[in-house]
Image (cartoon, rainbow, N blue to C red; front, side):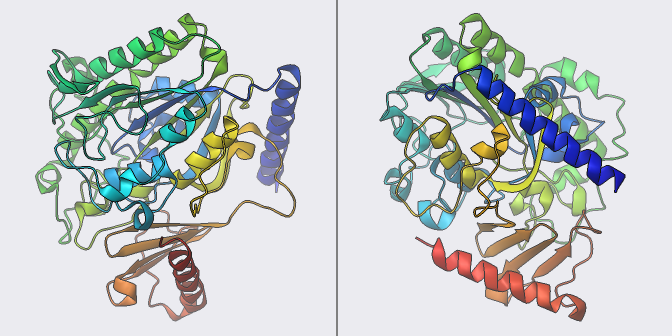
Length: 451
């Protein structure tokens, strides 16, 4: 009871502090938005989310200066489908991106018909820029009202090939440094009073794991990762088997990429500050998907196993909001939120109408700013995801993984006592009521948001 009371007092203090801040500073209805994304970065890999083996001091500092969502989920456990949901607020059923897309792939026609967040903001006068890994096909050409475009065209972290406003360019050096430099060139062109939307999309810490500066490998040379929780290789492993042969050595390389990503954050924040833009900029940091790093005997995202998986390691992602004077500091929100909530959230923050499309998400701006929700509109208690033949329903305690409309290998986990999802309760008679309720809820969600 003491812990519950303390948590409640902390929440009330945060809400009061946020209200006081908002009262002191008039609300800017047209904030700048800096969206920082990564790939294969699970929430569990960051220090602010409890990891004591990976070094992420800059992301941790960004989180402490704002709000950290502790139960944020991707809608799909793979980069491109999840990224499309992040930008559209729509499910993979709706936006049509069902698999990961290479830079050389054509953009799906269905995605071309969807308004992305950049389209919505540009229509209201925002200057929109993109720098980094696009991952949605057609990477060579600027898309969706991004009037400043720098997209990576190949794999690897050294000497990248880029599309800069539709022209191919070769750059020397380390890819994340190049992405940050291009992002900062965009910021140099901005002026106070002219709102912008900038997405900075890093590939870190996704494979390949070679090519990072040596200092990051040296940082982890003696790390044993005793708490990483990796298991013996699973018979279900479909990809990443080469990393499972020596998981500690592989985790060291991945951790190097995580810290290399972390080291990019100060340059972006410093540029905002130097340009006098920081106070009017909402910074959001997230990842399109996570990585198992040997947990469950698997390496990679949802495609690491056959059949595909929906373990928390691949769908539970970091989500941090930092907006000076608007978001309370040192704040945590435990509500279940999804990347499909980002579009309506940013739209509300920018006083822009969300698309009239059939969105399943909801604005989390009240949660991020500590405002109370209407009594008749409490926050949801469940969320959903999908990839190929596999669907997920997650409530505040249980997770259902439903394959082939129930004909495949299905799973049910009681996350209260089994956070690592080791014990499948799907066929346990004691959980049949929970199972059938989640199956029905999932069926309703699929029917409602299939188009």
